[in-house]
Length: 301
Length: 301
Image (cartoon, rainbow over all chains, first blue to last red; front, top):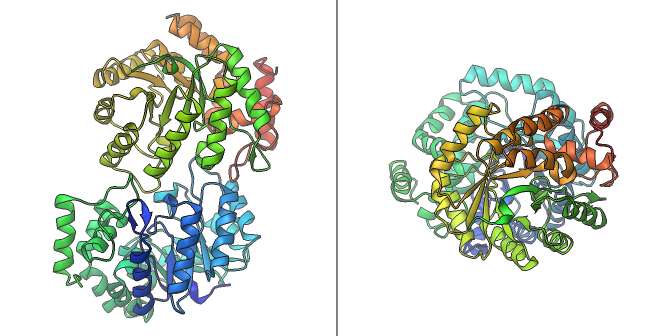
């Protein structure tokens, strides 16, 4: 069930808030900008889209706005929540909004077992009429997948892609790592990388999708990397990624969300203080450094 | 602002579900049982009460039911959520329901900084008319407090107590650890222990409260430990705790929540399968082992 929604470059926009409410005007502009940019899909309500902080009504509205303003670009909608019944409700809403695919992470409060996770995906899959992306993001979910668990989940017909954490940075190690995962799941199931700094290596090493934080706010430089890597042009892909090293360094120090939020605010794409509290945006010296990096990389417009 | 609600033995009941809805009948029976038991306070909607999985309406209702059925036992209500504005709404509801205190953990999805956490507690404290317990539970929140951060939060007048993770198990090490934390915060701020297997050592070592998972379902054996330890009877407190070693072993292997859920189900205090999905209850051999331990410890009635 691998589909166009889950191959190529998938761009995850912020969901900017203004005074603790979704800034729909800013959000629509972000989506329309992505729809014009040439990305292969738009990932609404990912971790970058602050799904975990929004209530059901806000998420329904964001899903609807995304589909309405994405032109013909496929939309993936994040449906994760702590409780299975809430995930099912969000899956219903996402499908009703016209999502081309949904993305589900095993969000946790109490640590989850592998059996819990299988049960979650199975319960949700029964109601889906669109493909599902399994979202493996231990940094936010604190759940560690294994290749064996990927294999169990890949038996569900709706699972179209697995969004994997960054592979090792070296090209050969990345290729071997991805080959091991590929061997664990059927060919119909795609492997997409998250962790923008590793994207070039991962796409060159066998991933078929890049679920990208960067592309949600700065699609241009992400497209350069993705197009080169998917065409097998290792030199150009790595060069394009290496040019962004100062940005990757900021991601490593502050987390990608706070950095792209600062970028969006600096570029006028989001209102000031656009993250959901208690998440504070970068301030003072940290924010000035983001501005310096944007200028140095000529990303200020 | 240290109060009776935050000293002694505080019992945290489950919030049992039946077919994905709060089983109000079973919950009220749990609360009334605690009110009769002699515990010093009841902690509604703690981690054990599955607060993280319930929506606002469910949490409001559970807070109201607890206060209504707790007789004159003070009630602490958990108000944690991922978004500050949601915490504020929950604080409002808890106070309207008649809570004697509220408890707030820095629940996280994106990793939080110390500044985020200070801002969260400050924002929430401004609206409180009841004392607040700072809930430090890195196993579920994935946020690590430091003594310096305790000190910053203790400057907020509404902070009455800090619920600390288990201190080291040895008596002397526990005493030294707690003394270091005591030195970091004003005397008016209490220190309460979570982690039932460490409770005897922690109460003997200087904690003034035990926020107890066990007591929410089995108040009797918890009261034995607490009364002895708070009276300074080290021999009796440790003996009472050591008698429960087989239970502590189950807690370590499965997490305390799944074990007390199985206990409550086996004792007829909660319906079968009472945890919120995707959390699966203990089954098969694991559940049989809980039953064996209950029988061996004469805790079957």
